[in-house]
Image 1: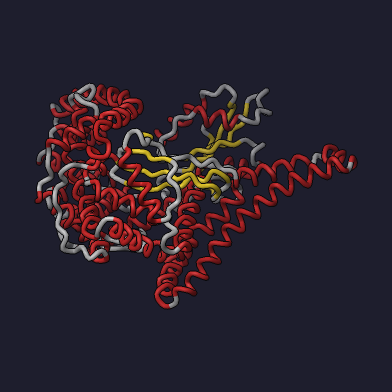
Image 2: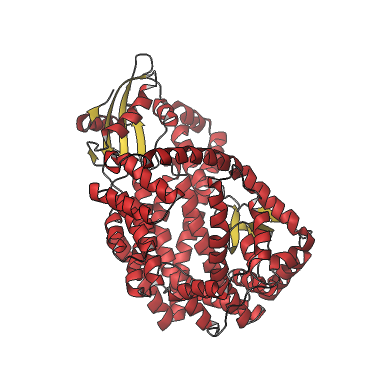
Length: 619
């Protein structure tokens, strides 16, 4: 654990201690933490308007100042500073997307929302959307700056509406509105909204990671994780309070039943509907029926068995609460609701059917229209590709395994698993690992398939595979699910901790790849020659490039994902082409595990020299 992670963990522990020993002191500390962020936002805004207003006033009141602005070109740094501040504060906040539901679609649903808003003194819901996911949430989108004039969107997952009763959906909506409620602690509701706002701010700043947002991004990269850590204890307490509100607005039994169904039906729909639907692409150029119309019919005709439901619920109850998620685990939430003895019972009469009534076909059609717009063409293309793979599979099966190259053996193993499965899959992956024992992807595939057969030796292969950065997350997920299913909770939590640590690693890795400078450690690239040649070939296609050298930036996270730096010299006549690096970058097709920077001497003379001295000439 590095120093930053250790500091965050210490803040988490301190917050838990402060909240339990002296809640008022904790709230005062948290209030001061909150004010710091708001103060920075307001300060940036005042500086922005102050610079603009002051400069305009001086320019009109003093002809000397106006002359100085233009003669000394002082307006250039002034413009740059103003633009930086403007971009930092006035960020566009995208609203969540989905099928927009109006009161005409479901008067009963909107009456329910109105009743809950009134009971909980919650802010007005401006928009209700239905999304494909098994989820529910309230998203707040600032209309001005980072926190002003919120637009509130209630998000309801279609799968959730098909799986719960009307009363259970009411308890879920009550839970979400309780986070924004003024009926309980206004301070806690404010902190909940502040956490969401800071997280949204961090996300948006990451999407606008150019030099214009660098100053504010640097502050929030320091501030946001620390605020989240110290407010974590209160955020978790808010989840319990929201569950209690859900119980008050329906009943504790109904709220507990909804929690059980969230786990039972999400697994059921995924395994019994979406997996076969996705597999049908192997045979069908397009689906027999559109996915959400098919889902409605499936839910009408198929009932989840008690054994399937209880298996999913039992699995969920084994999961323990960690300091990585504000949501407590299922067993603790049920205990807080005094719902440990509530048993799962299948839904008779889904909320979707009752709330939408005759309008359900219209809602389903809108969801299917969105799916068709974004996914139908890719389905057809994927189906054509699969038919080619089937032919390739048949050709590889006819060859002696000892005559296959590494790529051919890997492809045969993968295609065998995709099209035929059975014990031959493990035998092929074992053969691949015997021939190529240092291949992490081969170890992951073998470990995963062995665990599917309940062979404990697969864990060691996953342990080996997880040493490769890009395989840490999938290895952890597979191992965790296997261990939880076999009641090996302590071992499972070790893998869970690995997954939770990834969030910080991903953020640091992203920051490392945001930019390059002469202060970075530059080294000769160790990218395989064939992969490097593919990129060089694309750069050569530019008629403006005379010569090029390549090196790489040394990074601490995901070092297998190379950060390449190309120093290029332009041909005569193109030396003043300031946008040459951008032209080259925009023309490149680069694999997602690589980051490529291109620079000329004009961009950074010192870094340009370092790349030439450290790297090698490729053009």
